[in-house]
Image 1: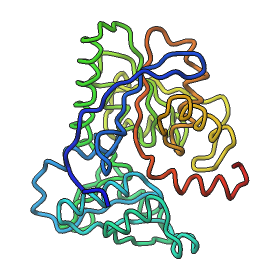
Image 2 (image 1 turned 180 degrees about the vertical axis):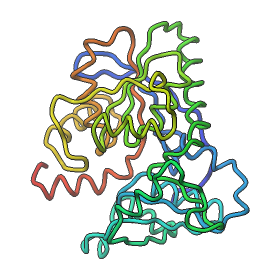
Image 3 (image 1 turned 30 degrees about the vertical axis):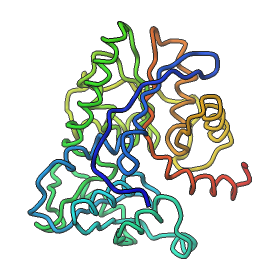
Length: 303
């Protein structure tokens, strides 16, 4: 097993080419094996925080969540129990753990299946939510790390990009980043000198704006939301998702992520002609989840 460490490296920027256009790629996937991409940014605050008052860290979400994987490692580093609340698992996954679920279990995750998961999710996702909603000894972190503390790490990324652009004399730069809850995109826009574009993966643009509002009431601070022409169901395998993922990964010898990146890349391809200046794409990590996604694509007969 790769050594678990809380040391976060500054992510490099490299040039890539995609469908005839040059881009800059911010390699946040290289920050740390356990805390890469937007999870490294969102959880940076907690890595440095004094959590001696807590015995547990808890969260909720999907059974292949990148946040679940990173929080399991985080809990291990901090010497805390990790409780993860989840919808009832498919029997096959219980008997044959794979991907992020497998890795989180190996790190000591304790999962709690909830038949009425949606009620629990609404309760813990309310603006009034407090960290000790599950007890004074439990640090609860919203699904995907959608907390105001995420701003600490995302600001560091914004500072890196602002400095990089200045050093490279780039005056006009547009940033493209995937969104689940939209937390990273929101705080990135707040601290960047450039426009941030993001694509909703879990829901619609309206869902994303509601998520933004939980953390910032001022719409002027929100990133630009770009939808794809076609509507997609989150988590469902699509041939065009696999094809665009394979194309950009092979062309640039960089493994992209197969759950969030494809839809974001399609939106980038559909809208980039209207974007002036240089474009930077943020690689938000999460490749550990590709193992389970590829199995789903095989099961669906797409590959």
